[in-house]
Image 1 (spheres, rainbow, N blue to C red):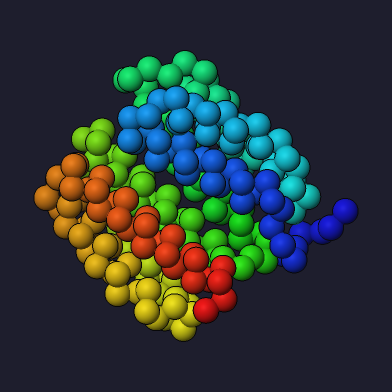
Image 2: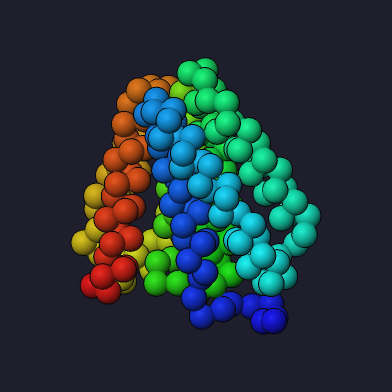
Length: 207
């Protein structure tokens, strides 16, 4: 059994659970309950395998138990999707995506773990805006700024052509939060996430 530290490559299930959790959150925000529930259920099924890989990396058992609780809540939300329950489902799914991004730091990866973390913060700001929780939206926007500042030196070296669009989308998102415009925030969060995905493709394609 490997000891603590970084392994050569992330297990496929970790990448899959991040993708499924993000898909569930995005579908819930778009009002597609059936697709959100399906993606959430797939993420829940992947968790035991991801959990085992995280445990091998000596992740704090208390942290894993907190994720266990979130996964149970996500499963319950997916099993009983109602129109009024889509935002809570989005919140739980995005929380799982954020945890998955954090777990990626345990492994060597082609794509930096910072990218899915940026996704999660932008989506969290949009969810908070939809819920009218503007203090939370401001906190997520500030965390997103901090994450971008930390990631900027690496991205400037690896993908300088992708940065201007990412920065424009980040500025628009911050303006939406300042103006408490939930509809614009939802739109600009989607555009920011699309810009992050373009940056991810740059890393994957090795440009």
